[in-house]
Length: 235
Ligand code: SAH
Image 1 (cartoon, rainbow, N blue to C red):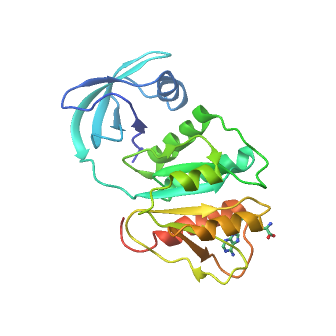
Image 2: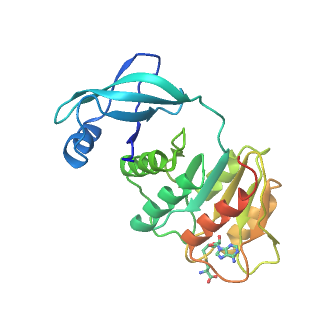
Image 3: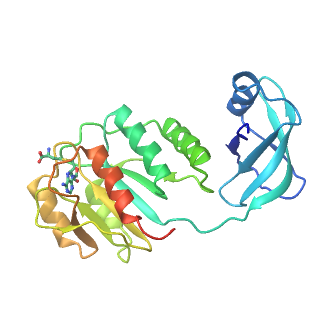
């Protein structure tokens, strides 16, 4: 069976509505996978569930979809925030893609004492998150936030939300599956500094966790931690 393209769109989705896709989607549908007017797609916008639709207009740089029927109603998804010390570009891309697949609802890069990067290309990271959400059948796209300093993040953190801080070589409890809102914090390749570890320990909402006896690369720690946090249940 040919796969039906699954596309994130921004307009509201209501019965029989005609909604516009992006120029990139027009290019992808028309030139890459060679779809035509009348072909079926699925669309979602993060708010109105997922809909079956048909391509109603297709030009080189514009595409329209006519909505047919709702396939899935919008449902609550994981409330799981990933906070990670910003990595170099390719690794950050990988973390954003995989964290989207693993259900992160917020992806927050932070700057720590040993972080080497400080900037991201917001548009590029958002595009990676959208593509991953389309592929993995999520109904939402995670909110990829601009980088902020670790200290500022901690000051502004909602105190009722546990923040599991992955700390290597510490006598911390192994990370375990939890339900409900929470966050995972992963440090940079060089690790957190002793001062940062002291600051983390001062916050009651911070719970140190271990990801096992080996020292993982930061990107591995992000993905392993997210997977374990949500390893049971379907939320
Ligand atoms: N260079 C550092 C290791 C940093 S690993 C050193 O050799 O000491 C990068 C980040 O991944 C760490 O800051 C931590 O958040 C996470 N991490 C890696 N392995 C971990 C483990 N076994 N348990 C918990 N966190 C881990």
